[in-house]
Amino acid sequence: MNLKGRSFLTLKDFTPEEIVYLIDLAAEYKDKKKNGVRHDTLRGKNIALIFEKTSTRTRCSFEVAAHDLGMGTTYLDPSGSQIGKKESIADTARVLGRMYEGIEYRGFEQSIVEELAKHAGVPVWNGLTNEYHPTQMLADMLTIREHFGFLKGIRLTYMGDARYNMGNSLMIVCAKLGMHFTACTAKEYFPDDTLVELCRTYAAESGASITLTEDVDAGTKGADVIYTDVWVSMGEPEAVWAERIQKLSPYKVTKDVMDNAGEKAVFLHCLPAFHDLKTKIGREQGEKYGFTELEVTDEVFESEQSLVFDEAENRMHTIKAVIAATLGA
Ligand code: CP
Ligand code: NVA
Image (tube, rainbow, N blue to C red):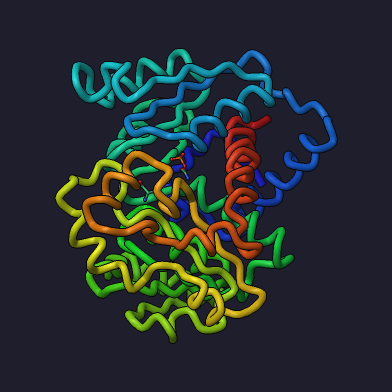
C-alpha cells in the first residue's frame, strides 16, 4: 500500500483497503509507543497546523504524533495568521508548501481544505471541517476494532445532528467498511440525500446498510455502538441552541438507550461532551434552558460501557499513521 503524497481530506477519497491499512498502521504505532520503540523516521521534516476553530485532541494529536516521528510543528491559531483575511487560501497554500512537508487544516467549509490541497504541493490533512472529520473516523474504527475484534457487520447508531461533520463521516466510514449505520434523530437532522445515495453505493459493495429513523426504540435496539456528538457545533450561531435542544432532546443517550442497545453495546463520543455542567458553555446553556446534561447523561458517559477516553487516545495513534503514510515514513 502506498499513500505517499496523498492528501487526507475525506474518506470518500479512500478505498476500504486503504482505510483498513491506516487503522492497521495506527495499531502498529500504538504498539511501538507502548513498548518504548522509537519511530522518529521523519526527522528533519516539519508540518504546519492551521486551526481556524479551537481544538484539544486534534491539535495535541498532531503535535505529539509529529514529535514522536521526529518532526517539527508550527501551530497557527484561529487569529494568528493572515489566512482568508489578508491572504487567499491559494497563496497561503503555496507559501506553506515551500516550507513544510505537510499541512493540517481545521476550519469551516470543506472547499477551503480542498483548495489548500490543490495549491500546496504537499499532503494536506483535514483536521475537521463543517462537512467531515476523517481523522476522527480512524480513531473511532480503531477503538471499535480493539473492543470487538472486527469491524464488518458492527451495528453503529448515531444519535443527534446527523447532517454535520460527525454524522456524515460516520455514515461514509461505516458504508465503506461493511458496517450497519443508523442515523437515529429528528428528520431535519438526517444526513443530506445526495450523500446518503453515495454511501448506499459504497454499501452495495461492502455489505453495509444505511438506515435513517426517528424511532429511538427501533433505531437503537441491538446496536453494538451508540455514538453521539454535541448538538451545536463549533462556528454555529447562538440562535440555533433553542431549536436543537427542543428537537434533539428525545435523542439524548440515556441508560434506557444503552439498555435497549444491549449488554455488550459500547458508547462513543468524539468529545468534547456536555454530560454535566462543568463547562462554561454547559453552565450558561444549562441555566438558560434548564438542563444539567445534554447529548448524553453523566451516568452513561461515566459508565463501563463508555470508551470515550480510549477513543481520544486513539486520535494520536491514528493521526500518526496518516502523517507517516502520506509522508512516506
Ligand atoms: N474530537 C475532536 O476533534 O476534539 P478536538 O475538537 O478537541 O480536537
Ligand atoms: N460536530 C463537532 C465535532 C467536534 C469534534 C463540531 O464540529 O464542533
